[in-house]
Image (cartoon, rainbow, N blue to C red; front, side, top):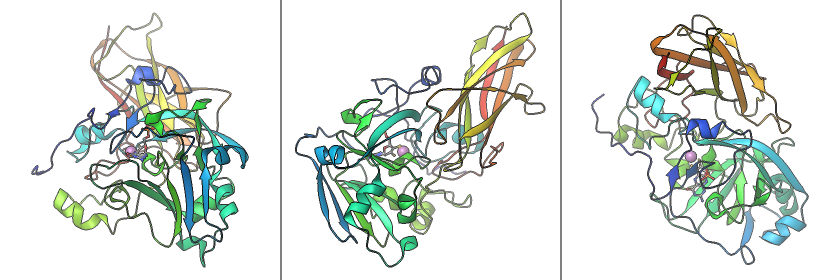
Length: 373
Ligand SMILES: Nc1nc2c(c(=O)[nH]1)N[C@H]1C(S)=C(S)[C@@H](COP(=O)(O)O)O[C@H]1N2
Ligand SMILES: [Mo]
């Protein structure tokens, strides 16, 4: 491709970072400490006073609400959810290097976390406000944060379809806690949306406003980002012309990653002639959990079933951590692959189609250039 595309890689300002793959898969529940969970910010991190902050619920509702954090905690039953939350740009580096250059910051395999969230269900809050629309299938729930400017807009926002938010088992929550503690400022204190199964961009942090409306969020990041453009759109200029009319990415696709060994690692062959392979797998959207992960050490000719490491917090929205022993010969330049299947029958494909923004990459998990000694 002729590169008019400008490269933007991971950057500290605003804060965008990911843990190393080995750190990431060390625990089933990703700790929200300094280095445990990835950070994705389109603007600066606000410091909000949780005692005075309110969330307004407005638009096509019978009773507009203004809810304090205390009300969100005390006036609604609190729902607990363990789920994966993934940036749509996770694995962009693999798309960029295996398929073709893309336009976006350079995430490797770590723009994902698997955490426990707690707070009221969005559905319950909307029920209290009384949704009042002619057609549930044509309305949207828009989330807005006006606390800080973003790089491409003066605020941050996103929306999900109203039917999704009202589904009995959608489990979209207004999270007040992450891993049994109040949210940290960088993960959205005092309240953020968590939409399981859906691109992380919709899980709006520092939530100010929920609006029931007949159109999707007007925010730049909802209209002009986080969309899978067709492969024949190859320049940022063409992308700009087509983004508005392309549907917003909601459900994330099935995925898996090889974290151990990682590309470039040197590993020692066991006496039995095998090596240990570990990583994570993610189900497609609402179709979890992951039911199978296979691993290949011969470029995909033969596959070995991995063991899915069970955890008492397992839910359909979680990631699966897996491990397998695979036979391999000593040598350099080894390629290890992973492939996941979920309860909905979705099977990871070898390579998805390229898209210029490099979102939703879900080709086989891979560790390249592995040396076995
Ligand atoms: N207000 C606000 N919410 C936001 C964002 C943002 O920049 N501002 N980034 C979104 C994106 S793109 C992702 S992937 C997740 C990242 O959440 P984390 O920083 O807690 O990992 O938050 C989403 N919510
Ligand atoms: Mo994201």
